[in-house]
Length: 306
Image (cartoon, rainbow, N blue to C red; front, top):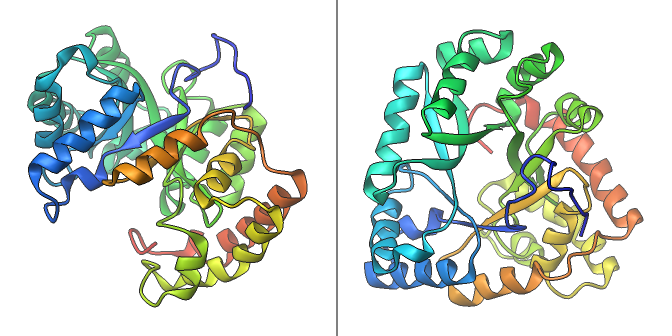
């Protein structure tokens, strides 16, 4: 696994971060979801969560109450069109967890805040205030294909320096949700990356071959192209392949994968041990596909259609 010095932004993240989206799925009994959260707590990994994940915070709150000595470090989504909305979002997340502060805030900006972020506006002073008040320790900026222009403009202007420690977006063999230009600039400037959606919804052969397994048709089509590359690698586990893919990029500090099943969680934990980058030719072939996909579809997609 790429080695990061202690001074590297976000180097303290656990390589695998437990995504809690599935903890909000009420198809599973509440007690079973609490048990899953406790398993992840016992593993000592960071958690990624949000009050937008149905009742996931209530599940986490119940799990935390069982052993407050094992409350994990958290990444929490902080959204809003203005700073008042963002502060309200922060409190709406902390209160159910009985927490007073947050290790890492994921900035999900709209409206005035997005415009200020792109052009070096007042939002940066407000983010610094949140730090000084001890409410949020650090920030990462959320990126989607349809929002990539915002951090692109900000990075070109140098505005996030000292305030934002990295960028968080879907990064797996089937998805790279930063535009090509932003991806290139992030690498040119050495910005830290948190990769989300580790396995892109499931094993590539299932996404390719099982009708309805892929959330959208584009994922099924991409699975058709990626499956032969995966097979060529000789790696048996799709989870291992995806984690190794993420960490084939030296700027990636962690990957966020969600599950409600103990066996899948154990597979994530196993795959994070002794991570080695994929062979260069495997990475190169996927990167070529992702540059093409971004130009053909991603940057033209309507919000939330991918």
